[in-house]
Picture 1 (cartoon, rainbow, N blue to C red):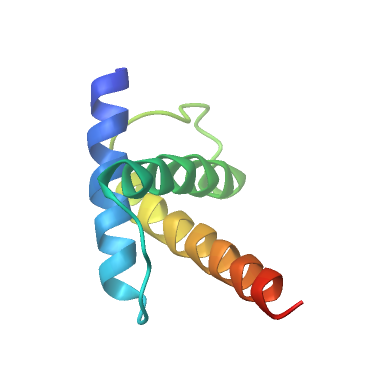
Picture 2: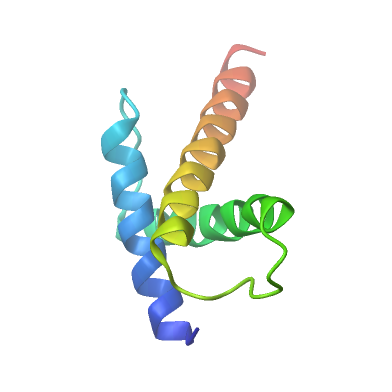
Length: 88
């Protein structure tokens, strides 16, 4: 997968994750794209545990779904860390 496709899928996954999760996330477009890219890596690594085809960075519907799920997980972790830091 090329870097441009990785950025575009990261943006889409980040936008979908922010739309699915309730609450207010104060992120701009670049932070949303980075969220999706990190979520895509997390989702790809988790997905590679279940699929043994050796092709980690191929674009396919399951990969996009795992990118969104990974982005949701990263968004939840960032939100939990932010709440812990504010209340501490």
